[in-house]
Image (cartoon, rainbow, N blue to C red):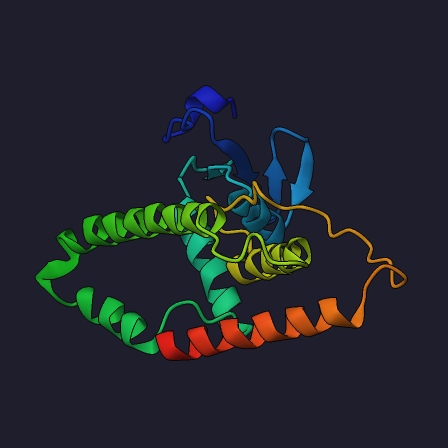
Length: 194
């Protein structure tokens, strides 16, 4: 069956995945079979994906995205709180379903926007920039934030710097004592903010 015969038109710029009768998923760009984990990886990297049933031409994207979310949730990657899941189930039984998709879309867009602004502020406003050993702390912070954000879109570390190897011969006990003092002062300030 030719692509023009499909019931659903391919979205421009999206990666087209065809589902065969055997339920195998075929990546039309790379001409190979893919798994749900592969599709989740494409999406995390910023690609839009469209999954089409080859025989019927039906768009199966929603079904497979829900399956990816369900698999992540069942593995313990709990992003959706129980209350949110409960409210989603309730929304299917009420008339609020018409407003819910728009609300969820706007909420996630605001979240991405605020996340991006937060990361910009983290990188631009830094009161400890002149502190000895700052480069090492910055590298640790960037590594933590990358791990914490888990590849969410919008985060990029523009100020990441590789920590320089410390030369033990050049460091004195006074430098270490000064760093310890500054760190304890920072910890006290953080505790007061909490």
